[in-house]
Image (tube, rainbow, N blue to C red):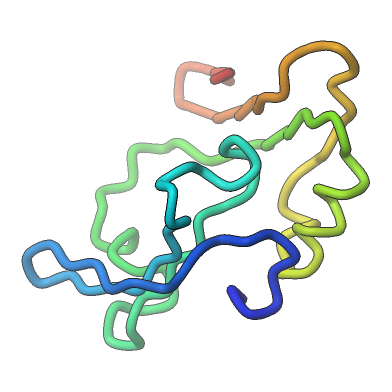
Length: 116
């Protein structure tokens, strides 16, 4: 994914915590790509399974219901997301004169929560 990305996600480095090992992209200046609207790329080794350590976590009954990214150049962000196969995972909107940002909708047992 990192090689295909239209956004500079930085070099791939190895991360480690306890028994977990992974590869992750980190921009050289430490910033989050596109102000946090473009994902940091992470790859878990095969023995961690398709979803890394997430399969070991208890099910709390919460699921991601939607992720909306608001950006000043939504078409460019959408194209960059498409370059890594992530364009169908989010909705990208024009933020106009407002600050770029994101909205996550999480379905919980108590109803839908929105995180901005």
